[in-house]
Image (cartoon, rainbow over the protein chains, first blue to last red):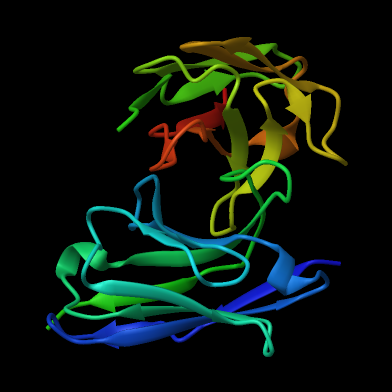
Length: 120
Length: 107
């Protein structure tokens, strides 16, 4: 059974940094494209970033480009999101999501999410 | 970027009702459309991909249709456990984009 467990969220001041982790199990992690999707309080879903199975190729939303970095350690079955220069508008629940093997950008499994709050 | 517009929101219906949500894309996305269900304080759950293909384990009362720019999501007979917010999402091109969500409430 697929399990995705995020951690690393918390309260951080504007301009600060935070690294999120997503521990994966129940599937061959290195085979799958993985993504981060966020949801601000009371708002809809927003795609943040995607990384290929090998980790070579990455994509970012314009709203986080240059500030966030996605990476993965396939030996540890773990996905990461390094978030720098955080802003109030980055406050959200951050979900890691596994993409379907045959249909990219189809998010077929999600973690439970980790809350990031950017506030002074 | 492709914009996704859902309607209505919110939506109020009674148990047993047939419920329909529409989603419109700002440009042709063929059938590259997903539907997700999100219950309060929970992660989204994939219900339908390729506009009309039901994900494994999803009840048959859920269905989807459409292509190009206009899509429909239907619950044939609303059940109490279907109370949630529903999102469409296009995956035709980067960045993947979601509709604003349709909150389904019991009348």
